[in-house]
Length: 126
Image (cartoon, rainbow, N blue to C red; front, side):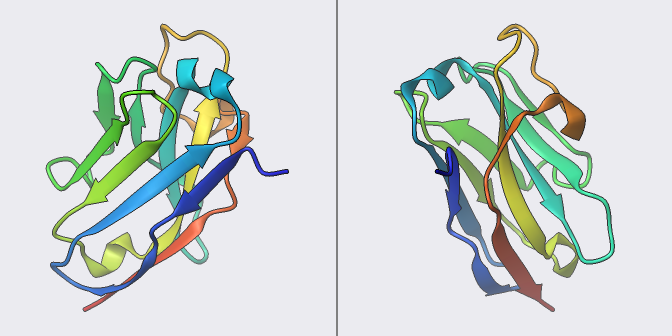
């Protein structure tokens, strides 16, 4: 059974906005750091954004800073990725992830995350 489930992907034009959601199957995820990664064809999976369990601290890759916004709902279960001013180079499969180790640490590296969703495709046409 999938523990993290992404939704909200689709096909949009350059300059459009899209919001991804990542829901969870267990309450314990409310205390985990969460993140979004993406993987374009032929490329490594790369960090996009991360958020602390409280939602007070957020981190972004330079390529999306100022355009993307990560947040989590008040119950801390669902995490969102608001993507604005999308570019063709944002085209990728987007994955949400969760880290259950130290809640004081918000990792930005792929290997630090143990839980992953199945991914949702985002395609931006230019």
